[in-house]
Length: 216
Image 1 (cartoon, helix red, strand yellow):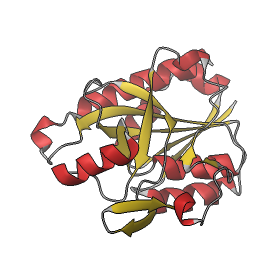
Image 2 (cartoon, helix red, strand yellow):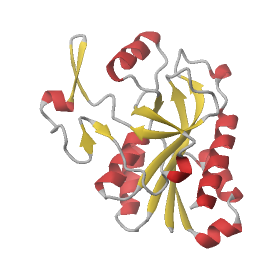
Image 3 (cartoon, helix red, strand yellow):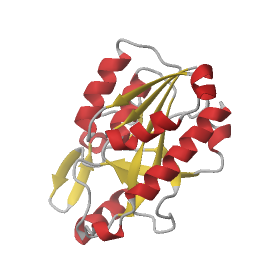
Image 4 (spheres, helix red, strand yellow):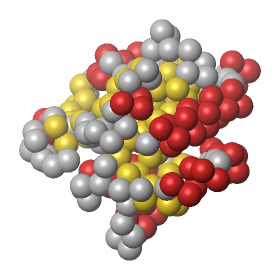
Protein backbone atom coordinates (compact mmCIF):
# COMPACT_ATOMS: atom_id res chain seq x y z
CA UNK A 1 0.00 0.00 0.00
CA UNK A 2 1.24 3.49 -0.86
CA UNK A 3 0.87 5.57 2.29
CA UNK A 4 1.65 9.23 2.93
CA UNK A 5 2.11 10.40 6.52
CA UNK A 6 1.70 14.15 6.99
CA UNK A 7 2.74 16.20 10.01
CA UNK A 8 3.25 19.89 10.65
CA UNK A 9 6.66 19.69 12.28
CA UNK A 10 9.73 17.49 12.24
CA UNK A 11 9.46 16.51 15.91
CA UNK A 12 5.98 15.12 15.25
CA UNK A 13 7.23 12.80 12.51
CA UNK A 14 10.99 12.12 12.69
CA UNK A 15 10.97 9.70 15.67
CA UNK A 16 8.19 7.73 13.97
CA UNK A 17 10.22 7.36 10.79
CA UNK A 18 13.09 5.88 12.81
CA UNK A 19 10.88 3.47 14.78
CA UNK A 20 8.97 1.85 11.91
CA UNK A 21 10.13 -1.73 11.49
CA UNK A 22 11.62 -3.29 8.40
CA UNK A 23 8.59 -5.56 8.18
CA UNK A 24 6.26 -2.57 7.86
CA UNK A 25 8.54 -0.87 5.33
CA UNK A 26 8.66 -4.06 3.27
CA UNK A 27 4.87 -4.33 3.22
CA UNK A 28 4.07 -0.66 2.57
CA UNK A 29 5.62 2.14 0.57
CA UNK A 30 5.60 4.99 3.07
CA UNK A 31 6.35 8.62 2.21
CA UNK A 32 6.52 11.48 4.70
CA UNK A 33 5.59 15.15 4.39
CA UNK A 34 6.51 17.83 6.91
CA UNK A 35 4.06 20.45 5.69
CA UNK A 36 4.70 23.24 8.18
CA UNK A 37 2.50 24.75 10.87
CA UNK A 38 -0.94 26.09 9.97
CA UNK A 39 -3.57 25.58 7.33
CA UNK A 40 -1.85 27.69 4.64
CA UNK A 41 1.36 25.67 4.76
CA UNK A 42 -0.57 22.40 4.90
CA UNK A 43 -2.77 23.26 1.94
CA UNK A 44 0.09 24.40 -0.28
CA UNK A 45 2.57 21.61 0.38
CA UNK A 46 0.03 18.78 0.50
CA UNK A 47 -1.83 19.89 -2.63
CA UNK A 48 1.47 20.25 -4.50
CA UNK A 49 2.51 16.72 -3.54
CA UNK A 50 -0.87 15.14 -4.31
CA UNK A 51 -0.84 16.74 -7.75
CA UNK A 52 2.31 14.82 -8.63
CA UNK A 53 2.08 11.53 -6.74
CA UNK A 54 -0.65 8.97 -6.04
CA UNK A 55 -1.35 7.38 -2.66
CA UNK A 56 -3.75 4.72 -1.42
CA UNK A 57 -4.03 6.33 2.00
CA UNK A 58 -2.96 9.62 3.59
CA UNK A 59 -2.63 9.92 7.37
CA UNK A 60 -2.32 13.22 9.21
CA UNK A 61 -0.63 12.89 12.58
CA UNK A 62 0.05 15.50 15.24
CA UNK A 63 -0.86 16.93 18.60
CA UNK A 64 -4.04 18.74 19.58
CA UNK A 65 -5.53 20.82 22.35
CA UNK A 66 -8.66 19.44 24.02
CA UNK A 67 -11.80 21.38 24.87
CA UNK A 68 -13.35 18.16 26.19
CA UNK A 69 -12.12 17.53 29.72
CA UNK A 70 -13.19 13.89 29.47
CA UNK A 71 -10.20 13.38 27.19
CA UNK A 72 -6.84 12.68 28.81
CA UNK A 73 -3.46 14.26 28.19
CA UNK A 74 -1.60 11.81 25.95
CA UNK A 75 -4.80 10.17 24.66
CA UNK A 76 -4.81 9.31 20.95
CA UNK A 77 -8.01 10.14 19.06
CA UNK A 78 -9.43 10.01 15.55
CA UNK A 79 -10.94 13.24 14.27
CA UNK A 80 -14.12 12.17 12.50
CA UNK A 81 -15.22 15.71 11.59
CA UNK A 82 -13.43 19.02 11.30
CA UNK A 83 -14.15 22.55 10.14
CA UNK A 84 -12.55 25.93 9.54
CA UNK A 85 -13.95 27.66 12.60
CA UNK A 86 -12.87 31.20 11.69
CA UNK A 87 -14.11 31.29 8.09
CA UNK A 88 -17.11 33.58 8.01
CA UNK A 89 -18.13 37.04 9.16
CA UNK A 90 -18.96 38.77 12.41
CA UNK A 91 -22.40 40.36 12.70
CA UNK A 92 -22.07 42.29 15.94
CA UNK A 93 -22.16 39.53 18.58
CA UNK A 94 -23.17 36.82 16.10
CA UNK A 95 -20.94 34.81 13.75
CA UNK A 96 -22.09 33.87 10.26
CA UNK A 97 -20.60 30.89 8.45
CA UNK A 98 -20.04 30.72 4.69
CA UNK A 99 -23.27 28.72 4.40
CA UNK A 100 -25.22 31.36 6.32
CA UNK A 101 -23.66 34.08 4.17
CA UNK A 102 -24.71 32.27 0.99
CA UNK A 103 -21.09 31.82 -0.09
CA UNK A 104 -21.17 28.02 0.16
CA UNK A 105 -23.92 25.51 -0.58
CA UNK A 106 -24.92 23.34 2.40
CA UNK A 107 -23.58 20.21 0.70
CA UNK A 108 -20.88 21.67 -1.52
CA UNK A 109 -18.22 18.98 -1.91
CA UNK A 110 -16.38 18.14 0.24
CA UNK A 111 -18.35 19.98 2.94
CA UNK A 112 -21.58 19.02 4.66
CA UNK A 113 -22.99 22.15 6.28
CA UNK A 114 -19.48 23.51 6.61
CA UNK A 115 -18.01 20.35 8.11
CA UNK A 116 -15.52 17.91 6.63
CA UNK A 117 -16.49 14.33 7.43
CA UNK A 118 -14.10 11.81 5.81
CA UNK A 119 -14.98 8.19 5.20
CA UNK A 120 -12.46 6.15 7.17
CA UNK A 121 -13.09 2.83 5.45
CA UNK A 122 -9.49 1.60 5.20
CA UNK A 123 -8.63 2.03 8.88
CA UNK A 124 -12.07 1.49 10.42
CA UNK A 125 -11.16 -1.85 11.99
CA UNK A 126 -7.75 -0.65 13.16
CA UNK A 127 -9.14 2.44 14.93
CA UNK A 128 -12.29 1.10 16.59
CA UNK A 129 -10.69 1.36 20.05
CA UNK A 130 -9.83 5.05 19.61
CA UNK A 131 -12.30 7.72 20.60
CA UNK A 132 -13.83 9.59 17.66
CA UNK A 133 -13.95 13.34 18.22
CA UNK A 134 -15.16 16.56 16.64
CA UNK A 135 -12.41 19.00 15.74
CA UNK A 136 -12.00 22.58 14.65
CA UNK A 137 -9.06 24.10 12.81
CA UNK A 138 -7.83 27.55 13.82
CA UNK A 139 -5.27 30.14 12.80
CA UNK A 140 -4.99 31.32 16.39
CA UNK A 141 -4.90 28.74 19.17
CA UNK A 142 -7.33 29.61 21.94
CA UNK A 143 -5.96 30.96 25.22
CA UNK A 144 -8.59 33.40 26.46
CA UNK A 145 -11.64 32.32 28.46
CA UNK A 146 -14.13 34.54 26.60
CA UNK A 147 -13.12 33.27 23.16
CA UNK A 148 -12.97 29.67 24.40
CA UNK A 149 -16.53 29.87 25.72
CA UNK A 150 -17.74 31.57 22.54
CA UNK A 151 -16.17 28.86 20.37
CA UNK A 152 -17.68 26.12 22.52
CA UNK A 153 -21.10 27.71 22.18
CA UNK A 154 -20.71 27.99 18.41
CA UNK A 155 -19.32 24.55 17.57
CA UNK A 156 -19.15 22.34 20.67
CA UNK A 157 -15.71 21.06 19.58
CA UNK A 158 -13.74 18.43 21.44
CA UNK A 159 -10.29 19.30 20.07
CA UNK A 160 -8.53 21.98 18.04
CA UNK A 161 -5.55 21.94 15.70
CA UNK A 162 -4.03 24.35 13.21
CA UNK A 163 -3.93 22.00 10.21
CA UNK A 164 -6.62 19.31 10.40
CA UNK A 165 -9.39 20.76 8.22
CA UNK A 166 -6.88 21.87 5.57
CA UNK A 167 -5.52 18.32 5.42
CA UNK A 168 -8.98 16.81 5.06
CA UNK A 169 -10.01 19.40 2.48
CA UNK A 170 -7.07 18.59 0.19
CA UNK A 171 -7.50 14.82 0.42
CA UNK A 172 -11.28 14.85 0.08
CA UNK A 173 -11.15 17.18 -2.94
CA UNK A 174 -8.84 14.63 -4.57
CA UNK A 175 -10.99 11.68 -3.41
CA UNK A 176 -8.07 10.09 -1.58
CA UNK A 177 -8.78 7.97 1.52
CA UNK A 178 -7.59 9.93 4.53
CA UNK A 179 -7.64 9.90 8.30
CA UNK A 180 -6.55 12.42 10.92
CA UNK A 181 -5.08 10.92 14.10
CA UNK A 182 -3.88 13.14 16.93
CA UNK A 183 -2.79 12.93 20.54
CA UNK A 184 -3.87 15.37 23.24
CA UNK A 185 -0.95 17.51 24.42
CA UNK A 186 -2.90 20.06 26.47
CA UNK A 187 -6.31 21.35 27.42
CA UNK A 188 -7.67 24.49 25.77
CA UNK A 189 -7.45 27.08 28.53
CA UNK A 190 -5.55 30.21 29.47
CA UNK A 191 -2.10 29.50 28.06
CA UNK A 192 0.00 27.63 30.61
CA UNK A 193 2.72 25.42 29.13
CA UNK A 194 3.44 23.93 32.55
CA UNK A 195 0.22 21.93 32.09
CA UNK A 196 1.23 20.59 28.68
CA UNK A 197 2.83 17.22 28.03
CA UNK A 198 3.99 17.17 24.43
CA UNK A 199 6.56 14.34 24.89
CA UNK A 200 3.86 11.99 26.24
CA UNK A 201 1.48 12.94 23.44
CA UNK A 202 4.12 12.31 20.77
CA UNK A 203 5.22 9.01 22.33
CA UNK A 204 1.66 7.66 22.52
CA UNK A 205 0.85 8.90 19.03
CA UNK A 206 3.82 7.15 17.46
CA UNK A 207 3.08 3.88 19.28
CA UNK A 208 -0.47 3.97 17.93
CA UNK A 209 0.56 4.78 14.37
CA UNK A 210 3.09 1.94 14.35
CA UNK A 211 0.42 -0.45 15.66
CA UNK A 212 -1.98 0.67 12.92
CA UNK A 213 0.59 0.34 10.15
CA UNK A 214 1.45 -3.16 11.34
CA UNK A 215 -2.22 -4.13 11.23
CA UNK A 216 -3.06 -3.08 7.66
